Length: 235
Ligand SMILES: NC(=O)c1ccc[n+]([C@@H]2O[C@H](COP(=O)([O-])OP(=O)(O)OC[C@H]3O[C@@H](n4cnc5c(N)ncnc54)[C@H](OP(=O)(O)O)[C@@H]3O)[C@@H](O)[C@H]2O)c1
Image 1 (cartoon, rainbow, N blue to C red):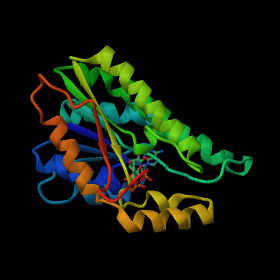
Image 2: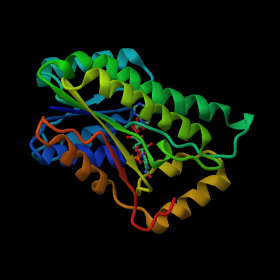
Image 3: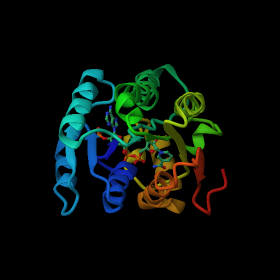
Image 4: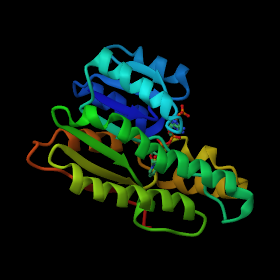
């Protein structure tokens, strides 16, 4: 049984499909309930769509309760929900900063503490979606990179605390063609980022395949950190 946050589009949606195809029952968490309802209704999925906002702990507690009672518990948690609101650093973007920290970093932390008992029960996998921006930084992505560096540091600590009961895997994608860039609020940065991503991006299914590969390894081994760039991406 796998729980995926941000399952309504992009990497989360592709991961839900790939895990379902690999035989997992999946719980699809996101705010846009129409999109996860549609995905859950796809043939052969046996999926549960649950409206949940990773910045709202009560909604996560309610989701975890439904997962326990309706699907019997969680073997895999994929912390995927995220925002990448790039722009030159300025006070004008301060709302973006709060949203990214609350969603990308605190959202993943909160989801994990809420689901941890289920993951521990019988041995599980925690998969945290970081980014190339979790290892490097460049102009306009400072706060986004801070959230992903945060994910990496937190995951390394959890690896040492939780393994071998819960395996911890960090995935660091480069450019992937999703709607992530469309939410950038700074027009000039959005246009430049969309042009960059369009030129070389890999597909969300490429990342989904890597996630399925990681969680399907024998329990004696763990792929703790996986960096996946488009072949054409330099930085
Ligand atoms: N695309 C890339 O190039 C790339 C590269 C490296 C890392 N990543 C990471 O991959 C992850 C997925 O991004 P994506 O590219 O697939 O983008 P996406 O298509 O925009 O998907 C983002 C997902 O996050 C969900 N989400 C956002 N805020 C949420 C909240 N408060 N509560 C619950 N769900 C929330 C969205 O669902 P709702 O709006 O329905 O809630 C959506 O399903 C992110 O963590 C991103 O940083 C992406």
